[in-house]
Amino acid sequence: MESKRWAIITGADGGIGKALVNVFVDEGYLVIATDIKPIKHANKNVFPLQIDLEEIVLNEEYANQFYQQILELTQGQSIQALVNNAATQILNSTDKITRKE
Image 1 (cartoon, rainbow, N blue to C red):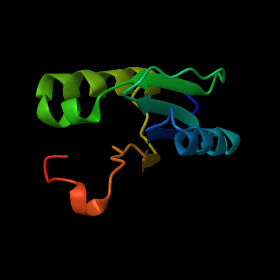
Image 2 (tube, rainbow, N blue to C red):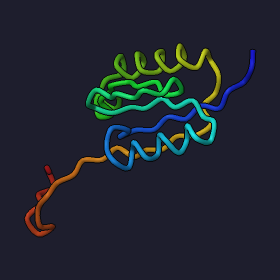
Image 3 (tube, helix red, strand yellow):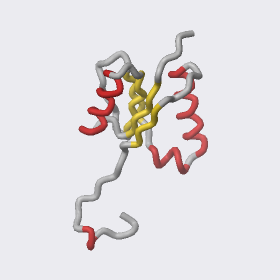
């Protein structure tokens, strides 16, 4: 089996995320593009997955399901790059943001 280079990019539906996906695809990677929202990519080298990263941390069963999806997509091949671009944006003055936010 031919070995392929795989990358996982989180937050892949935003502007920076989309640009990162495009750069990795241009460099020959197969990209697993994740976001909390549904992702639409027209490239055959992009594999969109709608996931909730917080749920991966909090729910072991959810995390195992995600892991199985990765194994299935990559056919057990290793991941060469992980770009954690996902973020939560709070638009407020820093002196008004609470710890809970």
